[in-house]
Length: 466
Image 1 (cartoon, rainbow, N blue to C red):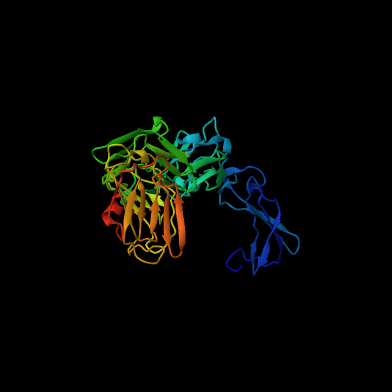
Image 2: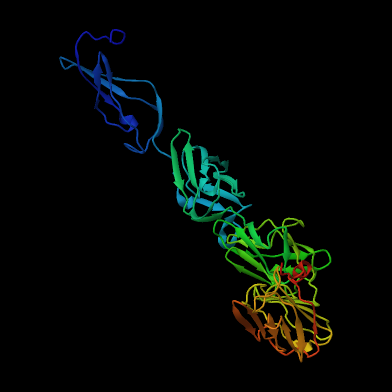
């Protein structure tokens, strides 16, 4: 242009020699108002591997008469078209302590790139290396440090750090940058397993602060852990109310513990012994693990999982509820002991619907032959006067040779010595057969107590029936 070489002749063409940069020796330039421009894109090893200094181009200008002039520039440029070599075989990760080589909470993932003479051994100076730990929950560009050609970065796996991760075939990647700014990113192929979720107590039976818990009930604890199963570790599980303490060695529990998926069932060899007592469950922090070896944090206090057992059962009282179809259970729960013992003076209550003939019995008692002159049988309704077959309220009761009858002339109910019970009402007649006594017959001298319209509430509570 006028501010440049300002040739008077018309310039017909201009060619640029980019060969020092790996390009062509005569790349045509284009003219724009006297400014001639040519370009060359530097590619990886384009035109050969070049890593040098004091490199220049030359320009050949030809006028309209064919006269040519060749002039080199003196920019003395530096060129590096070689990116660092980073190979998977020279990348390694370490630090897994979980089961099956898994990385778990608390593990430090150490990523290493070997650029020594025995490794990738790059000729150029490596200015920086960054590691992408995002698959492990870490940063995407964690700076590595250099020690004699070995580059190292670390990441500590924390609980749900970087999100909840529970996966396989996870890898890091290394990005190396040389002194010219060329970069290479290579992923490793360790295909690691990572689990940064530890088991967490999600629910239990009994629930925390539950009341009326049977002395024979199992304790069932459910854990949440992104689909992992749990496994038994080491340490103790302790169940105590302060006076009774049950200690279970997790590693040698003798069948007192069982695991199914995420559920732990505790079934102590010794049942809980104390009624109306506040028990708590404590679990060692090493007792419950997941598939990767992450441990449940444990329960070290007396309030996280505590419950109160049932009130003491008065074992001298027995209730046959022929409406609900059950009876007292002196061990607690539906599978408790239902046997009359010799030497105990029983008050036996038979509960029926005051205005219906329907009776049901599914929980009979054994040992009826132990019943005699110190035992009393009562008939009670469910809130109103007992109505008989004639539609009238009960007005009399009688016992003879062990056969008990309640009612006026037209009966309300009969009961034989073997426990066969028959209920009469205007709506019909129903019998529980011999189901009240599973074995034996009561003596002919049992006592007959006064009938009542309802079962005293204190008795229902004492028999865990209310």
